[in-house]
Amino acid sequence: MAKKFKDLSEREILALAISLEEEDGRIYGDFAEGLRETYPASAEMFEEMQAEESEHRSSLIETYRARFGEHIPLIRRHDVKGFVQRRPVWLVRPLGINVARKQAEVMEMETRRFYESAIGQVTDASIRKLLGDLAIAEQKHSAMAESLEKRMTPDVREAEEIAHRRLFVLQIVQPGLVGLMDGSISTLAPVFAAAFATKSSWDAFLVGMAASVGAGISMGFAEALSDDGTLTGRGHPWMRGLVCGLMTTAGGIGHTLPFLISDFNLATSVAVGVVAVELGIISYIRYRYMDTPFLSAAFQVVVGGALVFIAGILIGSS
Image (cartoon, rainbow, N blue to C red; front, side, top):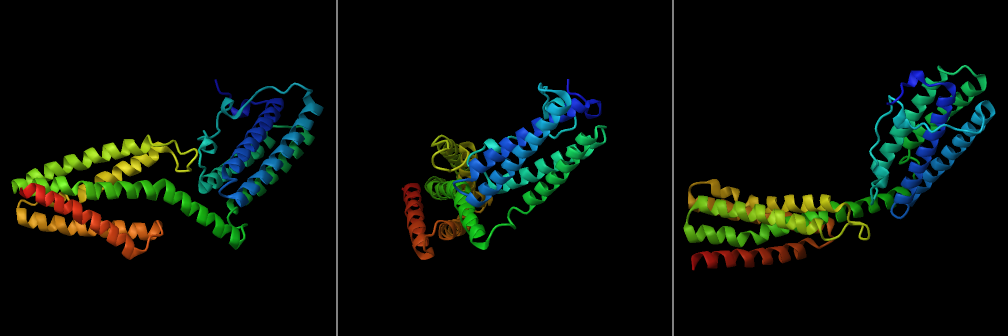
């Protein structure tokens, strides 16, 4: 059973404070380790915060020994009611810089409030003074966490933005683009083959939906099972799989929905227009995020799409 904060003794408050400082310091160490390769400047700041937490812990231990002796009871944050449950974001790799900064702000705010509340529950003058000093220190830490980005030089900020963009491309844009290309192009042949074979909008719609959903499921699992992201930095495999699967399905459904129009000729014309828009979007994404010249990207995508489109029409008309 978790204990109420107001029922803690002075001895338990100090023991809990020691545990909190140790936990926060280790989390900052994990932040520094997780950010070191991609965001070295922020990693250095978290190392500074880890060192200060270690100093706080040492001061608390000295005060505890002088007041209560050598044995420090094991009491942790989850043993006391009132603390916010923390998600272990520091264990995720690759670690997001914005997630780490936000978590640091929350941690410092919570620890500061703990010290401010604890002061009212102790009577020993030396303990009250130490808790007050630590509350002020945590307030400074909170401000430091909030201003982590502001403390960076323009060069460091630019380097971290480039690194952040690279991770975004690897973890979101790349699997999404693969899915969108596969969904948009691979489903062209079955959709238009069914359309020209049956001359029925509804039949073409059913084939398009089946092809889109099937391709989305297949591509999603293929991407999720390709690698776990630990060596490539491509992020959590199931997140990549979800992005890839959804974009694959969306790419196929785009030129499938027009076949809900009962007039076959009109539905086909609208579908062809949607295909042109899809190919243009794919070309722009490759130009924007993959550093591919727009004309080159458009030529490659259009040629591939056109070949699949023609194949579908020829098969459906045969």
